[in-house]
Length: 126
Image 1 (cartoon, rainbow, N blue to C red):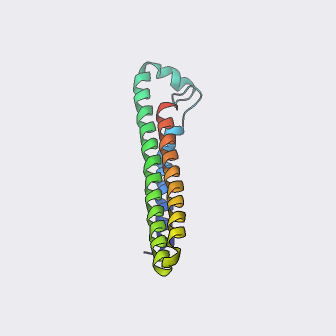
Image 2 (cartoon, one colour):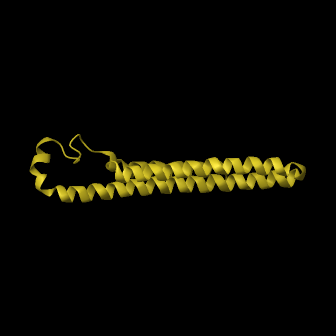
Image 3 (cartoon, helix red, strand yellow):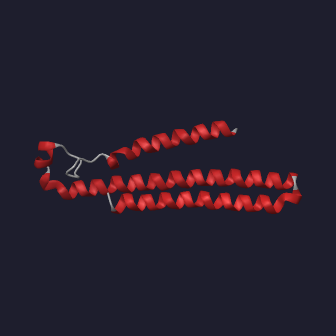
């Protein structure tokens, strides 16, 4: 499978996940997700709405972390493969290649940790 096809598949999965996660962010000013009179008529069912909202938040957080982890794993695999290929072609440059690879892996892992922090914020703040 070539890289272009792989990237297109990842983008398609990310788009589908984003569409699934949209309801977690679709809340009105009253925070219930209902409009006008509907909010008044459903006021007695606030506990049910909170449970539903919590489920949507958990789904959005899970999708955020899952997409970030999948993207990070793929990019780490590609980086390690390319650095191994570079070291095999030029063994004398292995120290600089290894240093560059480790720096890149740290940045990729940092992006994944940021996604985890965003997921925690989705659950507890929104």
